[in-house]
Image (cartoon, rainbow, N blue to C red; front, top):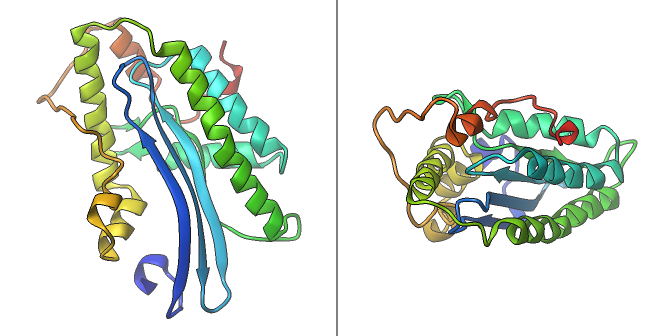
Length: 228
């Protein structure tokens, strides 16, 4: 535990909520939300978490809606939170061996504790508000997309994008690694994996296709709140 958390402590308390949704319809995006709290026996504590979205097909208007909702929550507590945590998500949810982001990002934060501007209560309330906005955001995205027709080719693309999701979670995700190293419950640790995912050797998409347009948007630094 000391090695993975990089702290000096004999005992710790940890609690959190993690939600990952892999929808059946490829027009409904994958979403991930995590809110967590760690406290060590030496008195050190911190909050962490965030929400990120992984559309199989990126819709700029829906991406803008998602990011604007997260920004609203962040701005209620600190005007620097959204740009800071948005960049953190861009950098964290990145697949180096593919040179692409896992999705359109969101916000991500860790080791957040009280300082001269924010009390422990402020950070707790921020984390609670972020957790509560999750259902509003995802309910909206489900309602917009759930009745959309899709082709077998679009379904196949969804399974390929799920494959990318699996690659990130098994190779790079710190939560997965920490859970496995700490001898946690395997089924809970791997709950983020989809029921089915596909891989094809050296898969290529058609130039100008919706798949190519999505790949072109899987990069860091996009100002999604300015999209229409």
